[in-house]
Image (tube, rainbow, N blue to C red; front, side, top):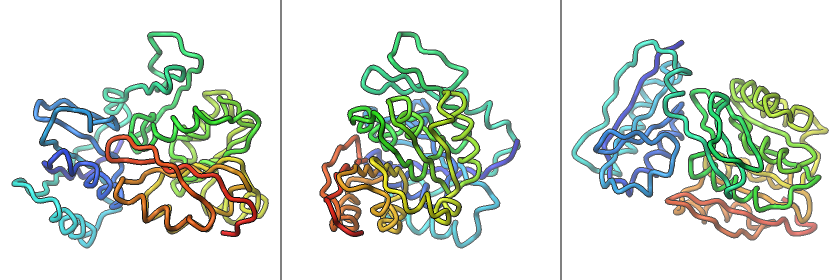
Length: 303
């Protein structure tokens, strides 16, 4: 059990995705969206709600915040004027795993894949049942960026291919890839907690032989992992990180392999495309304010 600092702000619904991205960039552990009726949407498609004004609340680990970080958040939020200023409060020690169980909802992909926590069961029959226990900082796939990636993967021929899930979080994308037929999947993340959660979720879904998560540093420093080429690489991370690691991600994709990028606001898609244009031409799938870019690597193109 631990305590957190909560930052909250009212905003126009049309600005909520950009502010959400701002909070994530600043290191938020989780974000909730609440309407005027106080109905909470946790990592769901709140863009479809009738609300004009929403309240965004972001939880931060106090050990990862300093005065400079708070000032930057406040400064960045001035781009989105509304009557209420940023509020923050220290939350008392709570069992956050139990708190989050009240809000986690399952995800349905293409009417054939049910994804939810181990304490939940589907009401209907689905071809594939995937159990993902999220932990505080991760979800089970409802957020637009994750659901976009899941949709692309579900419509991709994954039989006997190799997959890299770069920024794996719970491991949801890599684990679903294995369940859909991938020969192997490698998860990569900077967060040791994510590695632990992802590998545990792989065991819960009986794909621990196909899926293994690694810390980014370990992955980059292990020659056989770094130098290998893979059929599918998916990265659902911050736009700035997609651009920063563009060379690494391009180098991971085999000729004629597929690269799936998400975590991108629609108005950021051109900047991301530009960082990969030497090797990929992308198609765009959009949900709300968020997009996923999918491209096939051109043959013999160096990153």
